[in-house]
Length: 516
Image: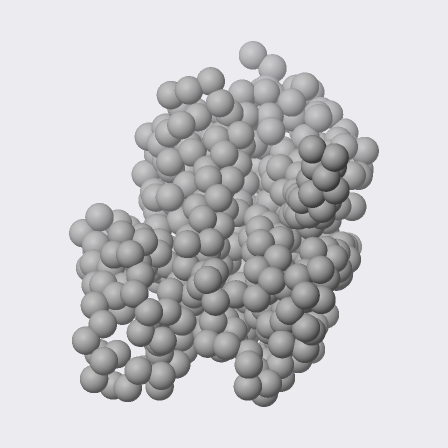
């Protein structure tokens, strides 16, 4: 008994150090759960909520995203519809479940019996951090895909080495990854590169006999075949209508995008991490993560925008790849006893370093200041004035309109998420042209916006109209683009607009309330 405290103390210390190593993951998780919700996620949630309420997807709700993201987002929308939970809470709960599932899959797929003490301690702390370290971008399509691209890469490593995997686990990882990769066509670069690497390890005969890649391909073909049957308006109406405008909206050259701050930094980090693979002990899982990272880089590159969430998959793969190889190196560089003793502190050092790298412009600063900045004030105003109402939103912005609408439990009546189709119709100021085109001069997308906004507005007048002071359309001489003046040329809009008299002024928005 006198020796009990001496025996228990090291175990208690080890548990405390393991808990400390998980604190960065917990901190980033709290950032992800704290307002504001990611703006693109919020906009898709608003569309899913309207779809569940009865509006027609890709006819009343026009967006270039393939339908799978709306199908998945309909799950929290249905939870919100039939439970006391609001849609933001329902969505966050669903994403938490997906993060936990990805964590569990990675845990099951690791070759724990072969891991050294540093490798085990680092992976125990690093994987949960990697799953949530994107903070504000948690829930984005890239993040949802990457959650299951990581276990897919670990499964590919086991397949490449000929290691047995429980059938249920292998099927679950494959189906989840296939759905993630199907969210955007660009994502298919990841499984393409990973499967080429599996083939290189196993040889063509064994790789082609593996049923898992064929299962993924079957899921993609089934999804593709379902589009004209289940969502005919997507291919027949939306894609021809908006694709030219979308591809030209906000894009930069393929060469230039490599030198943007986010894309350039993520690419350099990936190249540096891949250099670690020159060490012979890096391991097959690290090589599979490198293939996933390169696929993520190609996916971000071809979208030629360089936005923060585009680099999420490559950033997650890079972080796990680098941490894994470095941990394996420590296990081989240190004597077994020293490696065992140093493992907890090395794990803490790695996750703290990774967390420090990802404390940047987005989080936690956006969360800390959201309530006091203009974006948070918009949310507070909508909650106060139009909670639960329908709004016509005449704005070029996704953020901060979303998630302000979501927090106010209000719904946009616009058929698109913002006025981007109208912005695409007025990219410049042709010399001698009138400020607004006449209906017979309009392109098909512009006339669709002009007609449907006016007709929808008159048929079912919303409780309020939110108008951005900045239209997002270039000023032509002394004439700014006024969306109210533009749509008031339609008699149905002008007649209905007479009933909106009360104005709430904000920094960048005007809120017009209907006076019955």
